[in-house]
Amino acid sequence: MTVLALIIVLAVVAVLVVGGGVGLLVRSRRRPKPPVQAPDAPVLTADEPPTTTEPEDPGTLDGVPPEVESPAPTTTIERPEGTESRLVRLRRRLAGSQGGLGRGLLALLSRDRVDEDTWEEIEDTLITADVGVGPTQELVARLRERLRVEGGSTASVADVLREELTTLVGRDADRSLGTTGADGGPGVVLVVGVNGTGKTTTVGKLARMLVAEDRRVLLGAADTFRAAATEQLSTWGERVGVEVVTGPEGGDPASVAFDAVRRGAEDGADVVLVDTAGRLQNKAGLMDELGKVKRVVEKQAPVTEVLLVLDATTGQNGMTQARVFAEVVDVTGIVLTKLDGSAKGGIVVAVQRELGVPVKLVGLGEGPDDLAPFDPDGFVAALLGETD
Image (cartoon, rainbow, N blue to C red):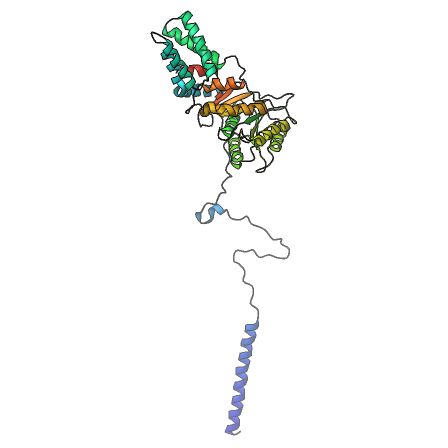
């Protein structure tokens, strides 16, 4: 064999060896790798069903406590103040704001000599206090007669003045609220008055007063022309857990009032209080509509009380409003608000004499329980500056 042939043979052998190694390497790369099994996972066989494990307590992860969902906020239902404590507190407040009238009269009547000039001062004091001309003349005539006949000391003068003022205010008038319906139905109370007198607030405060007496109350927001009135009444109702029936803004007030009374009858309410739109006494159309509200409500149940809310600070100017409202809806009772402000105590006498109906409730502040039944004896005592 020549050298050339030997070289060729060796070259062929080398090629075969290298080719075989490469083929083995390629096949090894193409072979699939066995699956990698998690070290903690159990090996399952065809006969073994899968098992589940409880998830780890999230409270133990990394020492971080789990998030706890906050409970939904709840509305706290308030317990209104009772009637007796209202009367005591409001009498003291009234004595502070109105006591000047009675004390002034007592000082004049206790002079050593009560002459004609003194009686003129007494008349002026009463008229300035919004008692009105007619009631003032009657009171002065009775005082002059009794003091002429009885005379006496300062103590007896004070007793005479107290008795005559109480007679003037009216001790025998029926001041109970008509909140009881007939045949098991709810009492229906319409609350009327001009915007700005505190009408909607009075409805809310009256609801609180009735709730304190354990009465089941429902409110009707029939002042549909003023969105703020509906919102305000709803807030009053939420605070004492009282349902409020509302309607669309600008809707028919009579329809809302009708629905409220119907709902009250269905739900077994004791009293339905209906807040009506504040009417201006010089707008005949609106006043006619107020009359419509009353007529529509009475198709569902009799109206047992119509309360007229008057701002006591308007004095004699409020008499025109009072007369018109009385003509339209047959007012059965009066609520005097803001009596602790710049109001004159004599307005109680004047408005009763004008309408022939009694003052049944008085408001003496802005607090939620600053409304109380009107008590003639307590009122006169407050006029005389007596707090107890």
